[in-house]
Image (cartoon, rainbow, N blue to C red):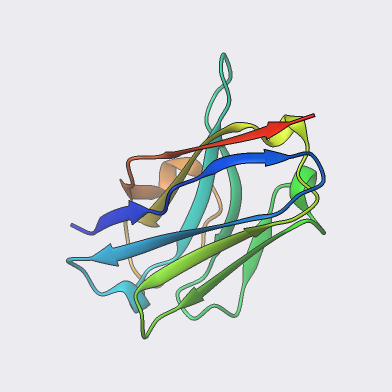
Length: 125
């Protein structure tokens, strides 16, 4: 099973930017789609963005389109989430995850089997 470790999040002012990274180990990173998810207090965990194993396909939830960018570096076994124009609604614990199966691209939470520990992102207004 893949082990995932997210970078530290942080406190950002509204309108600011933050980049999260997630380092993978223990599996064949380049064979698996990866995703970023988030969970705000009192809300269910939701998908933010996903990227196919090759990096050629991406998916974004409507609320982050045009502001967030997911990318991956298969040589470094790392996936990134660049977050721009942050607002208070982006405040949440962010998780990276790896698809449970290789060579597929399904942008749903239940498709992902390995999860990082989560990192807090707080946007102040």
